Length: 356
Image (cartoon, rainbow, N blue to C red; front, side, top):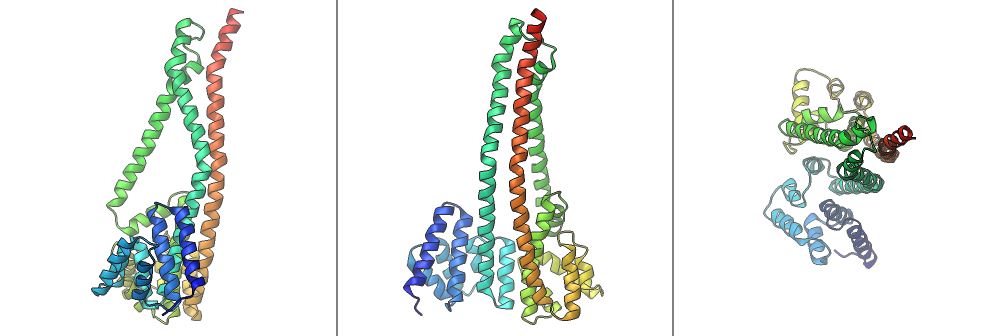
């Protein structure tokens, strides 16, 4: 099977530009592999042929592709083969479900697009926060320098009263700020350590209840479930078949944990929409769409559409949040600078006023 020169140049120019943007990052390499595989599969290549083309091209990291090809030739499952591309449990679950609805090319394209958008948001966040955090670091360094070097000399010369609030601020603020940062990092570390020992359902419930982050997490998870379920319903699978398909996914994934609970609930006679409304990591609209779609018989198309809308809302909110963070950080920097100047010069002005 051949492929035109223009198509090849399109693949490799896209691969080169992505390398320039994500060079050295595992997520960037994973995105390149998935994008190219999706493109080749969409153009009629079988998976083994697509791997051969990518290996022969010399434009990709061949170690993972060679391991992928060897696993495929040994007759390993598709999910096992894709583990060599370092996919997450959630991404592997999507690959597993693609074997049931048959849209492997579309699934790979969706995963690659998701990785691309997430990387873009990370870059935007780094650009937004880089300068303000450098200012904060500079202000804190200046505060520490004043406390350690200049303040002792001023106190020894008698130019600043020891009991003034500004002097107390300069003496205690580094300790207070350091203790606050240490406490925050310890709290985050304890939360992450506790979450590691919990199942995926408990972790998802925890993230969905957090302020600000919880709303974004609900949109992300809802978009993922809507897309995968929508594809399965569009292929004509019944609800019980879909739950059975979910139980073949990675046991560490959220989809597998949900399938166990949903199967138990359905065996007890609980409607699907009622069970879905109990999960805090799914939006309330998701359960309503499932209930109305079941009655109308158009559940697959409605879920795919809702997945697209949820995904757009997710990235719009992330973009707004990123642009909101910068002015908040600048306000914090301004507060630190004003406090630093006030704490430094007001005691001096008070001393000069007493002398005059």
